[in-house]
Image (cartoon, rainbow, N blue to C red; front, side, top):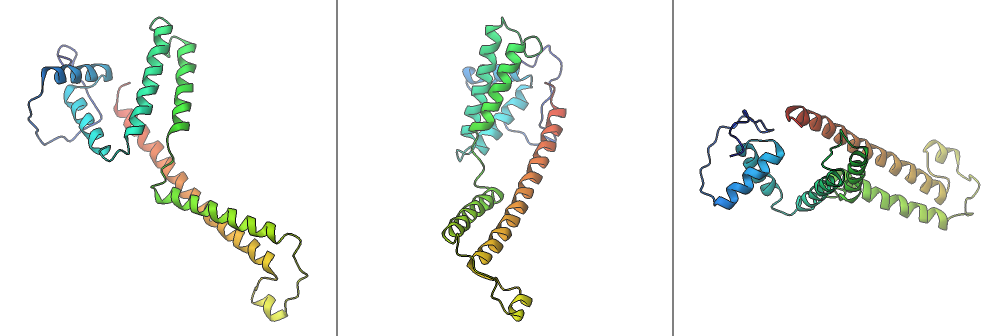
Amino acid sequence: MADKGKGRRRGPLSDKSEVLTTRITVETRRALEDHAERAGRSISQEAELLLVRGLQGSDGSLHHLEAVLDTVLSIGRRLSQAEGGAGTKDSAFVYFGLIKALEWAQEVLPVPVGDEKFREVAELDDEIARIKREREDQAGARRLDARTDAERQADIPADDMDALDRELVAVLKRRQAALSAINAARLGANQSTRDVISEIAI
């Protein structure tokens, strides 16, 4: 068994208080032991992580992610085999090849359009495109400022082009605020990832 004779293995899951007892086939047990062995985790940790992954991806949202990560892992193994089993610490070929695979993973992962922050940016981009098209249609149509003093004091647009310019500035400000929210989410994810990595021996 993967757990015996190798010290107590750890994993990212803690505060485990519930007990789940179930019977599994010999084949499933061996596959689970193999997964745990490769990941350097206990069978218990690996079993729960696989369960969590399956439950989170039950709606299909993580299936694409799993396929991408499996591809990256497969690339890493093939690169290592090509270098006689060398790892990233031993081979620049493996190191740069795996970095390229991770760059590819970033490119193919879909943008989380289901997240309100990303959806708002996409909608604002459409709005910006619309305003720019209208501004192009108005090109050359700007008139001299014929506003009255009262209209200027009320900050009423001088003409259609001025109104579109103001609308564009307002939308760009909203887009910047939405991007700031996305950046805050990215920073939060980065910190959470660092916290998890610090708990897992790699």
